[in-house]
Image (cartoon, rainbow, N blue to C red; front, top):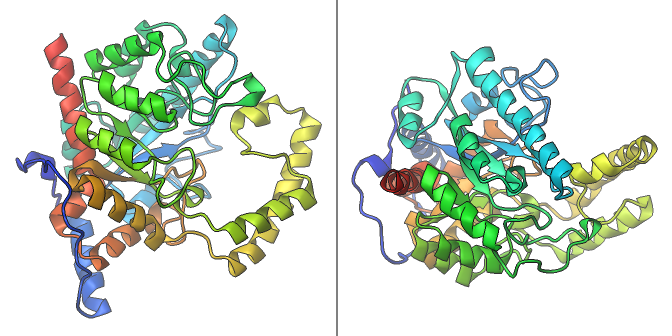
Length: 427
């Protein structure tokens, strides 16, 4: 049975300001690896964002079988990943009655899939956590821990009552928006195909304020990843409970809309929240020469511009979809040449983001996420079986056991616990 260190249960005080960066570990490489393995074994590890397809927990995508996906139960065990937030993601679409009903239906498909995994298929190996206390209890029993996050508040539509229903089903955070504005919030990535202007609400909408209040009331963490800068700053002021950024990294190191600048990070700290730095290569490191080579390859293959989101795929005809898949296969094959010439982001680059956030806002406000099966992954942490490599890099840089435990889940559990406290006071 795994020996678990859960800092938030030990009464450790929350730091009020940033601390000096750890000094690099000394000793032989073998000694550092041994120390890292001991710390990894002692630490409760939580990945706050792992995507699933709509046919998850079926014969087609069996989470109990080691397969091609980045997260499954065998890979979690191999990598010493104790807990994962499995994501109810629905890509943004039309915001009319039919669209909102479709979004809810798609969300329920993924809720059903997660429950099928934990309640029917693999109840002896993984269990769904409904409370922050459940996480430690389940992990101590030897099972993996599943939790649920919703990515894209569009699944609420205009029905505030759905927030309580989703909470009953196990949702413990909601990302207010995704790619494209919705009725709650402006997105960091407006979708021109949906008619989005740069901003629709100037941040959080009036309805969005009601959504945040209701999330606080029922005990769902407010997730500010993917939303616009102004919306994120407003959310930290509006929420009575600390917020999370479930899968975002640092803008100073990688200037993309999804990442957070210093003002946002400081607002997150002042709110008591946590940024779950994300190991998604394109949000970890920008290499202009690499990007130019990728753009040239995309032009040669006549690939459509911009990210190919699930909703874009759904809008394609069968002929367009087949053509895209063929071109994408050729693209992936030729990307191997580009990767050799311009190495993609690795675990060290990823931990640079943790270092930066640590130095600016302190150890109590930084966590770890992968965005696996949603585009996540860096060299060295490209699936759950490689989770130990993150701990190893943290140990090499001199992070202590207590600090690593906070990064790997203690801080997130603190926010979850505080969200439960706020909800209890509002009943």
